Image (cartoon, rainbow, N blue to C red; front, side, top):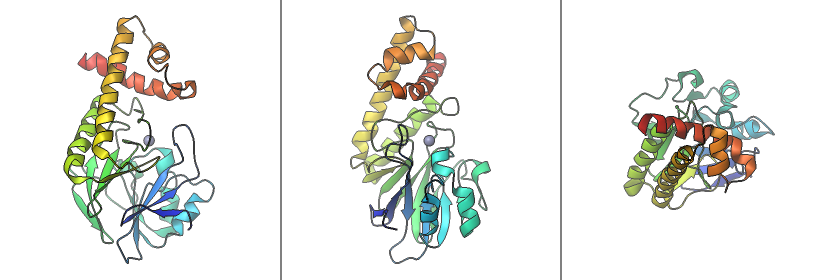
Length: 256
Ligand SMILES: [Zn+2]
């Protein structure tokens, strides 16, 4: 268990061995454990590959598995983890839940195995995205809504820009008073939550202006817009940018 890296009093990171252009250094599996407790809560157990599932099982008794959203790189090993440990799996999407009710429309505070958190619905990256405020640590677990480096992709058509902007603003409001650190789904810990959320909000507005200008200049397809607006981004990331552009084009159609 040498890969388990303590980050706050209650949260440790187990980095999954799935680095890539969208997963950065890999998926962060977050392990929440109250001081002195045998049991832990696992957030985003991650991919099965290369022994990651075995390492999660080896954490000891798992009281609950929480998914920040259903994307494969966060949720793949949840069913097998349930089979191996009996731990219930809770998510926003009922199809992903095993032995637990899905997170409701109006989630609140929860306490499991001495770990206390507030669940916040943060759709946008995906429709089922949620974030968790780990209360004693004032640590905010954001899944793919806020990443450790760069900015997040909107996984269109399931993900939507209007919802994403609302979610960022909701997290910004919480961060202003209650958050000392962001524990993202990928990349390093974010030490300045308010600054980063302000940057995310400004970046989305800036991209939206650029997409609006590209459409005004005659671009008609997402591919054309990406070529113009994402000229500053490595070409290998353009397929992902296209997903965000489609979400922005949808947004402009509705909101102008
Ligand atoms: Zn995702």
